[in-house]
Image (cartoon, rainbow, N blue to C red; front, top):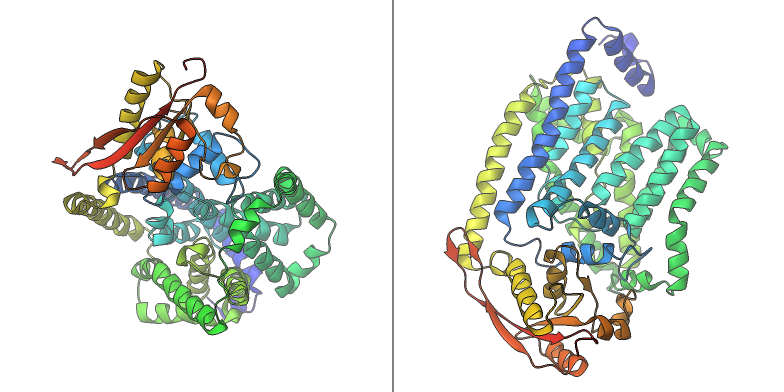
Length: 521
């Protein structure tokens, strides 16, 4: 790369690199190679769908995924803990696909894959397509877009929303076109509907717009009004719901602040920072493995880009803007931070690394990505199978809890005692009850007997009229008390076992209470 080219502003450099590729006679060949690279992302999604199924005997022990489902099928504009977007996605998915663990893991993997394509699209604003594809592939091996993304919830949905929001932000900053502004506003609103934490992204993007002189004028253009209007329209139904429900979700968010001393909050953020470094290390290694020569020099340049905004300022502000906002808010609010809170924040880091190497004329063997990923996929399948087998051998909750088997037994008891095939409403121990709703194929609704305010789509009179099955873990004393008081029914104790990896696992104990429909009574 000659000195004249180095003196061109960074944004013009990226545009020139793209145009050079498009105008070259070998463009069609390069495009085909890039297409082969991009095809690796759907393969990666399939591998992780199978890997999740191998490693997990249940969807997730905390119960987030079945909670998503029972919320979503009610199609509310908001729910007790979170805004509704990820629950809507779950409900829409299972209107088409079977109510199985494998189908749910496929949704999780698809969500991650959409986010990875968003990272590629963002990188494409600065790089040729074949190098932009590398950015997506490198991030695919990070735990952020693999092991952590398999639990689809309010955090995981941001993996698909944040990269595409950032992409349309850059596109709007570069072009100023109204349709980019419209897409940016709509996606920003959808991100907030995924989780309120997305306010972090919006603040970071606004900071980035003011930080870059070429972008600053867009903030005060008439097209910015389209961004605001589109975001407001997307959020409007939820805003109305918030007012009608006395800002119920804010109560849950407030519980995440602990009132700890400032030193404790700073300590938590330090641990959070170390976790982020660990999450990004596999992606860093992936890029280094593609470097043709001088890997140590390339690694130093990539690390230097993290502390030197001048090396690629457009992407630096997108990379570290969210991280800085998270740090300020977390320390100021003295929040009980979890390392997965910011799992979607690193959409720009690998594009930045690749851009720095491209600018420094460091060559990457992009075709080596295929071999690296094949080895990675083999390790994933072997490792996840080992985890699943070990869990069954050790009788862990993840492997041994018979949630699908419990649903089958509950339906049999309901039919025997009520004379009807379908359980209309289920309640009781939360994870078990919600699992029965999920594995019942979409015909059973969930009602929270302990906190009916959190499930306002049903009232006690509705439940008594339609009938309800209550499931309690044998050791859940409060559930038993509430079930007896509400249903006046006798408990039916059951022991449920599940088979996994050729083993019959130890039984888990439950009790079933049946409140038949009013007509049956």
